[in-house]
Amino acid sequence: MLFSPYTIRDVTFKNRIVMSPMCMYACDREDGTVHNWHLIHYASRAVGQVGLIIVEATAVTPQGRISARDLGIWNDDHIDGLRTLTSLVREQGAKIGIQLAHAGRKAMVAGEIIAPSPLPFDETMRTPKEMTKADIEETIHAFQQGARRAKEAGFDVIEIHAAHGYLINEFLSPLTNKRTDEYGENRYRFLSEVIEAVKEVWSGPLFVRISASDYHPDGLTVNDYVEYAKRMKAQGVDLIDVSSGAVVPAKIDVYPGYQVPFAETIRREANVATGAVGLITSGRQAEEILRNGRADLIFIGRELLRNPYWPKTAANELGIQLEAPKPYVRGW
Ligand SMILES: Cc1cc2nc3c(=O)[nH]c(=O)nc-3n(C[C@H](O)[C@H](O)[C@H](O)COP(=O)(O)O)c2cc1C
Image 1 (tube, rainbow, N blue to C red):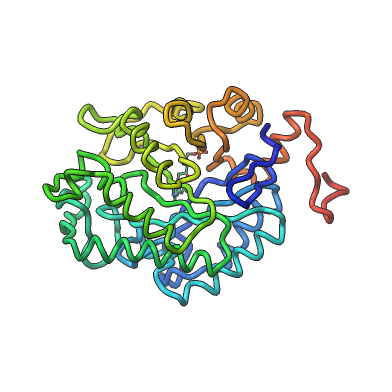
Image 2: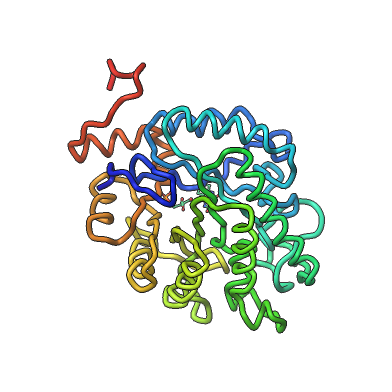
């Protein structure tokens, strides 16, 4: 199944291998624009036969960057570089998505940082300003404008980053959202409004990445996310990319496939397509997840940093003849 095509809306990925979004912190000019590094890095994985490449967390506002070296999509000036990137990747037969992000209280850039409630992540981080209604409206609008620019730049997929303790995740979790207004009474409201705003300008495949467990006794569990996933599906989200943690400092026991049970539970209980991610490193492991109906797509992170040709490695392991890029036929 790993090498079978998968279609969402009118977009077909040639296989189930997804490059997981990974920040490169490579914008040397600190202006959010695409640099040569991004072109080389993502195009290499397209040549390596990844089906869908999801570009790293890309900030919808300058203050929503994790670092000053993040990619950005807050300005129309960002579109040209991103268009070069999408055409390079698509030329090599891969589809390309972008992760729209706002770091919230985890932003490490100069100036004011914002979050649903004025609580720092830990003692080393700054205390964010509690967002006003105007801040909320502006930020939702920024996600919408990011989606509009992503469309103009030629992306096939948009993924909303609602995981890892960044802004949207901070609204979802009771550990980070202590508001008493409608965004606190209904912690899903902010994400819901971001999805609606994005949908006004984007009709292509829409993914949302979540943290399915806060790993904290008073935090969210996968069961809470089953309910959120049902709501996302009802709003037209096509796939939930299931990660976990990083909302508050916590000790996480990691081992191969440790997040797969979350993807499986959400897929089964919310009846929605899921992506599995986290310490998936072999073709057999990926095949097991797909064949047992635990997820629909396999997201690969660090293994693809080590080996841009990982799809070829996985195909060899599974005894599959993977078509070579023409110039590489003699070495394939
Ligand atoms: C260098 C690096 C940067 C990352 N940046 C992001 C990011 O931008 N957005 C995101 O959702 N996850 C990010 N992650 C998490 C990965 O997408 C992935 O979920 C995680 O590494 C677990 O998968 P793996 O074991 O296959 O690496 C990053 C991970 C790494 C190693």
